[in-house]
Amino acid sequence: MKKSVLAFGALALGVTFSAPVMAADVAACLITKTDTNPFFVKMKEGATAKAKELGVSLKSYAGKVDGDSESQVAAIESCIADGAKGILIAASDTKGIVSSVKKARDAGLLVIALDTPLEPADAADATFATDNLLAGKLIGQWAKETMGDKAKDAKVGFLDLTPSQPTVDVLRDQGFMMGFGIDPKDPNKIGDEDDARIVGHDVTNGNEEGGRKAMENLLQKDPSINVIHTINEPAAVGAYQALKAVGMEKNVLIVSVDGGCPGVKSVKEGVIGATSQQYPLMMAALGVEAIKKFADNGEKPKPTEGKSFYDTGVSLVTDKPVSGVKSIDTKEGTDKCWG
Image (cartoon, rainbow, N blue to C red; front, side, top):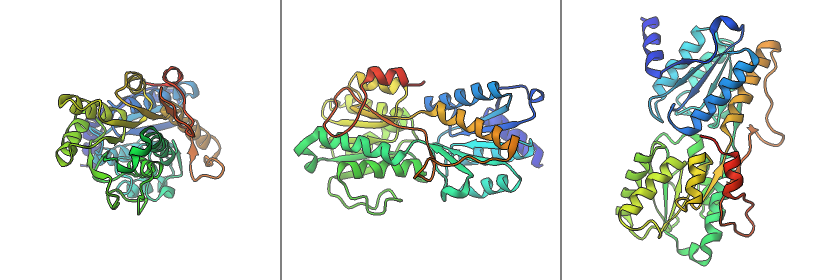
């Protein structure tokens, strides 16, 4: 029964093989939230290229949608059964996946969280990620400075990820608040704030359709909304589409996080005011290197000095820079983008 379930899980996940299994002694797994979001596409590209370079056999799995934790659990089971040396995972449910991660670690696998820290973070052996709190702060600071005196009377909406509030969602959301000058109350939780400027929160599942629907919902709550924080650029584009449909696209400042090539293009075109660019290819490539090193000599990766994770960098991308907030323009952002 277990074998049949695992086999079905592999088919449902769309498992792919980036190197022949017989060609390497070291096997690794990459488990992402989806295989359609450009961020995870680039992550897979980075892992695949590095695995080929190092002679590592890599299997890649992805959930059907953002938030599909069941498929990720099935993928971990498959990786354990296949004798993998390590797992790279961008978890959809950062709390719910912990017991499965523990099972993998107990079986001797190195588990590295990519982009999204687990809860608790030390449930994984290491985390390779953007400083997502800083990413949120940067777009919050930029939005505040761009609005000037109007920021104190802003009407702010938050287009978040999923109801489970994975850490990446919380960190970006709460970071934006800190940058914008909103007291986040409990910084580990979305939705407990009492600032009168907040119109509300809605979830998008990190895609355009979700962003469009969430934006429509917030417009029904308050049609005077004029600032939107989005979890990622696909959600931002969906929000813009909803605003454009009612002739409000010029009235609302949209900020986001990701820095993919389509997102940087959206900044250049004025769809998004500013975005925090992260570097998924580097995350995944470094992760594969770490698994190979662990397989060779048992060495585990160490965090960036002064942080609890390995920081893979972040840059604010905008063509409308503001005083006091370091940024790069869309030309440089395009040179560094992905997807």
